Image 1 (tube, rainbow, N blue to C red):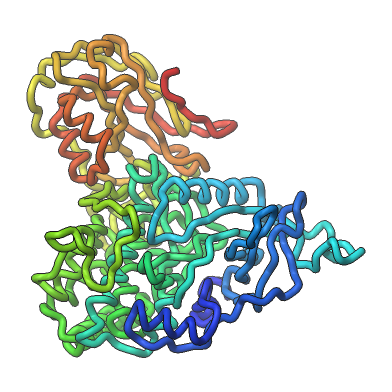
Image 2: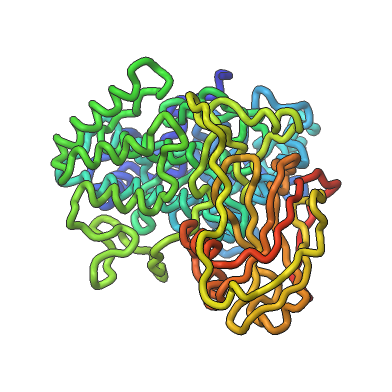
Length: 580
C-alpha cells in the first residue's frame, strides 16, 4: 500500500460544502436535525487563479482555498462564458498517481474519464454527483488576459481536471462524526445509507447503465453530501470505474471502508461486493458516529458486531439483533456471502429500525416519501433494478490461474471480475445454470446459430445470426454466461426486430463481452439462442427487470442452439449498431 492508498478523512470531508457558517448551520439543521461539526468552506471569493483546456485556458475561475485530498485538490469554481450570470461548479485537480506511467494521463486514462462523464449523464442519478467535463490543461494560473506571462511556468506540464456539479450541503462526516444515532435520528441516518445503496444499485445495474455497470470504489462519509432536496449525494467520482476494468495502477481505497479482498489486492479488478462492504461500513458510521475498524486487523469483526449492537440498542432500534445482523451481512469477510440485491438490502435495513415503516423506495400508501427523505421533483417510484453482479463468487486476493496464464485481468459476464472461490473454499466454481422450465409454445420452436462458429473469437461487441421457426406469440433472445468467473447468472440481449417474430426466420443480434478496455480478453463464454414468450421479452425491453426476473425469463425459455466463444483483443473499440 502506497502512502496515497489511504487519505486523511479530514482532507476531503468538506468537498463541495456550503458558502458561509450561517448558511451551513441552517442547511445542516434543516436536513439532518443535527449540528455540523467543522468549519464551513467559504469559497465564494475568487483566488485570482484560472484553469481550462488548451483552447480556453481561463474557462473556469477558481474560488476560495482548494481542499486537498488523497487524489488531488478540489475548488469551488465558476463558469461564465457568454452567460449573463456565472454558474457554480466543482473543479478537481487530480494528483499524479505514485505508480503511474510516464505518459499519465494517457489517452486511455482520458477516454475512461470521458466515458464516465457520458455514463453518468445517461444514468441521471439523483444520488450521484454529475460529471460535466474532463480536460488536460496548464496548472492553475492568473488570467492570461491580464498578464503577459505564460499561464504556466512549465508550458509542457499537463494537469488533469474533472469538472463536476457543485452540490450544496455538509458531508456525512462533518454532520455525524463522533455523534452516535439517537432514537429521533436513527431512521434518518439509515435512510441516508439506503439512498447510497440505491445509488450503488443504479451504478451496478446492467439495465440502467445500458450494459456498462460500474463501481464507485470509495464510498465513505466524506464522499457523501447531504443535499436539502436530493438527500444523500455520492461525490468524488474520480474513483469510478467499470466493473470489468483492468489492472488499477493506483489501487485507490480508504482502509476503514474497504473490503478485505481489496485490502489484500488493491490493484486487481473489483466486484460489486466491494462496494457492498463499503455500504455496510457507511451504515456502521451512521449508527455509531465512528469509522469501523479496518477489517484485516485482529478482532475487527467481533468489535464491529459489538459496537453495532450497542449503538442500535442505545438508539432504540425496533429489532436490534435484526439490524445488527443485517449490517454485518454487508460487511461479511467472505465476499461471496454479501448481499447482491442492494435495493432489497436497503429496504430491509429500514425495516429493522421500524418494522412497520414504509418501504424507502416506495413511500407510504399515498405515495409520500418517508420522513426526512424528500422525493426530487419528477421522480418516479421504482420497485427494482437489475444488479449487474447477480450473485458473485468473488476473488479474495487473487484471480483464476487460467486468467493469469492468458493475461486476462478483467472480468467477463456483463463485465464481471474473474472470481475464484472465496478464501478457504476448496470446491469448484458454481455450476452453470440451465433452463429448468419451459412455458407456452416456446418448446415448439426451432432455431440455429450459424455465426459465429464454435470456438470463434469475439470482440467487445459481436454480431450473432442464424435461422428460426417460431410459433405465434414467441420470439428470440440471446443469453450469455461467462464460463470462467463462476457467476451463475445469464445476461440477455434481444435479437434485432424481436417484436416481429414472423420476420425472424433469419435473425441477427448482438452480444457484449468484457469491456471496451479489453478487460475480458481471454475469457470463455457460452451463448444460448432461446425462444421465449413475446410478452416476457417486451417486459424485459420496457421495464427495469431485477437480475432474478431476468433469470426467470431465461428459465422460462427453450434453448434452440448454443455456441461457445472466446473474447479476443481488438485493434480498436468496436460497437454493434442495430439494423438500419
